[in-house]
Length: 205
Image (cartoon, rainbow, N blue to C red; front, top):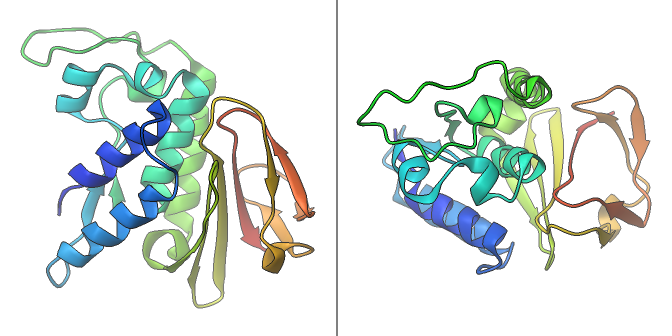
């Protein structure tokens, strides 16, 4: 297992507006092509170096919702996800890991609960962990489907800090899914109004 340096830099660039959302699929493929047999990438939206140099996830990804959306992409596209100190409570600190810098572990309980849901679904889904990836390119939204046997998961992430009217790919329109992180079912329409940095995760019904 080794760090996903290219993926992180691309993810950072997308949320800062310097890179196109489709670039994440390119970085994902590039990194997969460098792996030795049996190797995996350690996927992260921050780590000790990133937090020290670039700041907290709530800074890098423009708030709590952006930080969660970035983690969904890091945790679900491939590899094994990493959570770094303070990320799970939305700590705003630019941590200097050479000194003692305590974290307020009582902050942002809603964010901690969201991370737990994201990780729990990954743990239960072979598709997310090892499935084949199908990318659906868009200028604002990162959408991909992962399949492993009968396990089929669809991930839709608005990579913009603004509402986006997303044209659902034709092949997905009218398909039925179970909501992966919340209760209920969904039949995908032709368009979705996605809130800033909103992420949707569906499992095949």
